[in-house]
Structures are given as structure tokens and as C-alpha cells.
Image (cartoon, rainbow, N blue to C red; front, side):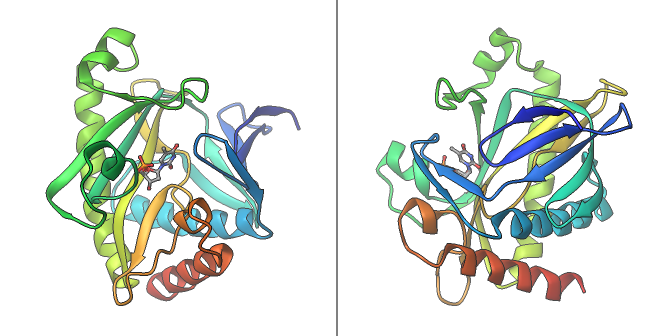
Length: 237
Ligand code: TMP
């Protein structure tokens, strides 16, 4: 089958169905816009299983997504979308680039979720942008953006509770959305949701259970992902 796209952590392949693609999770990990690179045995499988459980849960909760079905350990079938070049980041507690930008310490609980947008461009390092940039760059209309905001908040509420049941605090995460190629009037949640693109802290111990273990050389990266999967499986069983 034809390889259509290769990103830092995934590949997209054509299928026999013109309206779907095969999304393959790779073992590669990158951080700091690709500056730091590594490969972890089993990462593709763990992220595929984690993302599949989360997408299934979100679909059940009424969130439209690109997800069709799991194909095998490292592949899922997804609806073909044209990805909006806006990444939506939702923060419930201060961490990462929020702390860097503001000088505020890590772990401050926000009174309301903080939403930010970045321009999906590896070349530019996914810079922070705002509603006016998005409108003028033609990345999304103000109506689309209002929809993204509303969806992101709904997904956040669902996932905060979902992860809390697993003993995990959802600190922040990144979402991507796309227009269905079959019907461009419909915008759905796309990409993956896994510890690569979320910050998850153990509620009891405060331990980091996500890609910050790799970013900060804390060790035990795949052990943490495995633990997240184990807890998600218990809750969804
Ligand atoms: P940040 O604090 O580095 O801005 O990241 C916020 C959240 O978004 C964090 O959970 C990691 C996720 N994220 C990605 O998935 N991809 C990215 O390229 C970046 C910058 C962040």
C-alpha cells in the first residue's frame, strides 16, 4: 500500500477504501520540535492501544472522531480528513511551555481550563498563535474556531473524569481536528491521544506518567506508558 505521509511518530497509508486511511504508530519519539530523538520498543503498540481505548470512550460519549477500527497492534483505520493546521492545547494545571512563558511554577491549578492554539508547522516549531492570526492566515473561520474551542472543552471534561478514574490527573494535552474528505462540512477529532501528547500525573504520588519522562530524562518511559494502559484497561473493562 502507498505511504501518503510520514510524521515524527506516525505514518499514514492508503487503503482500498478511498475514504479511509491506515494510521501506523511508530516506536520513534521526539521532543523539542524534533531536536531530541529516540526509539522505544513497544511505544507504537502502547500508544495505539491507549489511543484506541480513549477514542472508543470519546465516541461513546458522543464526540465525533476519525476513528474507524483497530487493525492490529500498531495500526488503526481512520476516516480520511484534511487536517486543520491549528493545534489546540488545553491546560488544567500549569506545566511545560506555560511555565516557561510566564515564570509561574509547575502544578498551579487553573480556575478554568486554559486553551491555546499553535500553528502546525514543524519548520516554524509550532508557534503560538491567536484567534486573529488564525482568521488572517485562513487556517480556520471564526465559526470553526468557536467549534474547536467548544469541542476541546467538552473533550477535556470527559477526559478529566476518565483519567481520574485511573488515578491520573490530566494536566494538559494537545488535540488536532480535521474536515472529513467525504463531507468537508463535518469537523472531527483526529490524530491520537496518548502519553506522547498529554501530561498525566499520578494523583497519589504526583509521578509523571507521560512523555515528560523522555523530555526530562527521568527514565522508565515505557514502564509509565504501560502503567497508563493497564489502568485504562481496568476502567474500560
Ligand atoms: P507544552 O507545555 O510543551 O506547550 O505542551 C502542552 C501539551 O501539548 C503537552 O501535553 C504536550 C502536548 N504537545 C504535543 O503533543 N505536541 C507538541 O508539539 C507540543 C509542543 C506539545
